[in-house]
Length: 484
RNA sequence: GGCCCCAUAGUCUAGCGGUUAGGACGUCGGCCUCUCACGCCGAAAUCUCGGGUUCAAUUCCCGAUGGGGUCACCA
Image (tube, rainbow, N blue to C red; front, top):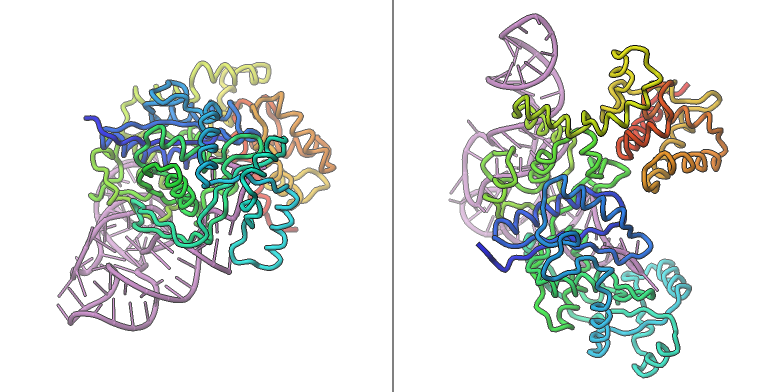
């Protein structure tokens, strides 16, 4: 069966692979398969300062681990290659020229200082719809051309209509209409010559013949900009379906400060990709027949947008864990064994752990107990508050240090002892602590012990996500500790 | 704050005018059992509120409230 359904997942390679990406990817994938269409992967790396090839590789690897194979993408190519936006800049530049010629976009020469000042004034005056004041919109085209020719730094903005509404049909929510007056003259082309999401997204979706844009709810408010762009180009817009955002237990949008969000965390903590996918399939969707445990093919078979809800589901780790257990129990012993081997009982992983314990054990039987923290998600025996607090420090200060360290560590890339040690030293010294103090707290937080193999080797092997999770747990233990 | 989206137990969901409001996680109790887990049985716990529409609203409409998103040269 072939069809015109073409959908995409379009991650931005600016960090760790996010479960939200897997969530949206799942629904795109299922919808494509349900309709005999194509599912593509496009890398949105138009932010030159934040994008990295490292992150892109991690995202591709994570999506592959989870098992959602794309039909076209940067790694496998396809009829509309390239699938990396940084390699499509010519396309965006000619699109911009087109837009300017049609009067739908205009160059803007405003400086950052002016924009900052404007924003500050609007904030102070409590303007209801703050945004760019369209100062450059009235510059005569010839003047603008001359200034550009003279090499003046500029961006290109969308000339949004000032009145009326922009309406669109959302596949999940029905008709949505937004007052044009509340929408800013978005920057489409940055001063570095790269497009913003809004431009690149529309241009690529059109050229890649995307039929349905299935993305997160966070995009609803900028959809009118996209609609206006399609209109300006004279293109038929795709169908829009905005899925609800996955939520933290407190209902806010899922965030790494409150919940593990990296797909790698779930892998390292011992979750199975099929269970994760099944769990995500239960978020905002149900087959409608009380089946909660189902495979992706079963989901495809029963899929329909009428079964998708627009309510923001809380990502409940306890429920995921239960589901994961059901998958494990349903395996044959051989299957479980091989899954354990794929996970951390592989020669490859053991070869990383073993050298760290080699000189520290005197009998073979000491290996497993001495290495336990390499093989657990959360520590089996979480440390006591007292063990975490360095002499002369208190619980609050230590909690704060660890919590801040978690944030600092987020930026460490790649995750290796070579990068970790200087990062931790710099952090420690910057806050006036002795490395001896914080490193011990770190060790206890990560391994649950005061004696361990070298700290940074250990952290490297345990991995970023598990380390950060344990650090955060330790900070919580300290915060919950009774005050003297 | 402006604009937009959403609203069934603590959580994920079924329901699509008339139901003892169904299932699952979690919680609590019991059975099974050398222990634990699994499994099985059971319990507590839900339609945010106020107006309409209707013979009848959890269900349809409006409003309030609550939650969320968004207001970047980030996506």
